[in-house]
Image (tube, rainbow, N blue to C red; front, side, top):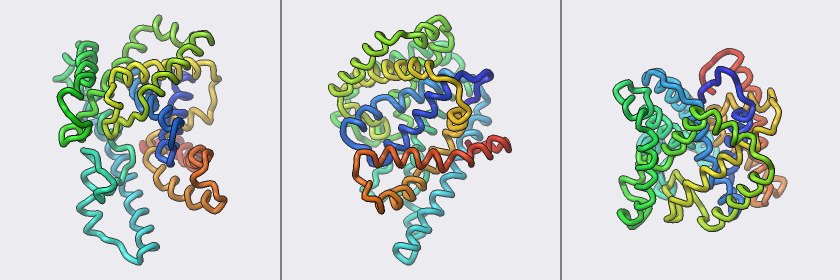
Amino acid sequence: MTELLQREAWVDWAKALLIYFVVIGHASLTGLPRDLVFTFHMPAFFVISGYLYHPTDWKKTTKRLMLPVLFYSIINVCFMMLVDKLKMGGVNFERYATMSWTSYYTVAWPDKGYITPFMGIWFIVVLWFCRMLLGDIPQLTWIRRHCYLLAIFMTAWMIVEPLVFPTNSSIIQDLYIYRIFSCFPFMVLGILLRERNALKTQILSCRWPYLAAMTVLFLAMTLRNGYVSIWSNEYDNNSLVYYVNGANTSILLFAVCHYFKKSAIIENFSKGTLLILGVHPICLFVGYNIFKHFNLFGTFIYPWLVGIFTLAVCYYPIRYLNKCHIPLI
């Protein structure tokens, strides 16, 4: 979400593609396409977050992240209540008052009746914690000096985690703060790319034979590891493959994006990732009701069409908010 002092086109392209993948991932994407997307889209987002990271006062970071979350949560809850009113003739306010809070700090399983006012809130919460560890809290700057060792420790912990926890879900594992272990190493990878300019240049200038090799590795490891969901702490009990595949595919994505030219449209989507994340549940609902009339729901192309629809709906609001310097994007 951080603005580059001098915009790099590959970053804008990567962010725009990744937020699109987030939307289609929530739009009933299934099978191998789902496995491929979920393998890397959130790890790559954390790599970019690390690449763009600069220490900021924790109060300012909290305001930048949490005020938009509050705003979009209110919008989404109002929309859900409106839908309930139209479908059932009334709104169960008690349910909204008691079942909407869990999703802000731990996994809120839908089958237990929980309501999620901000889909993707786990990413914002984990990003906030990672930023605090990296230096937004001055008292924790010593962690920033040892972030590479800490990333190695976290990776090692997730590799041995199945030996400690028989299942992938417990009270501790469901807490979003626990996702630091699976996301912080990717932020550190982003910091490494920013600090080692020669390494970044070498990665971004990869030739097509190397890109082809990384693609084959990506496909092979995804087929080996299957479905990955950071939200639900699922890594097919093989976190090492998760880390290696997430890093490999993030680098592959960045290298491919480096070949794309600067685009005002893509830059607009890149600036508006928070808005897209905030309102995409409404767009998914509207898109579902539109495309089901054309018998497209449940087809292979449905998630991809809904993703395009969502970005199209968000385009001009992002432009307007950016022009007015309203910090909701």
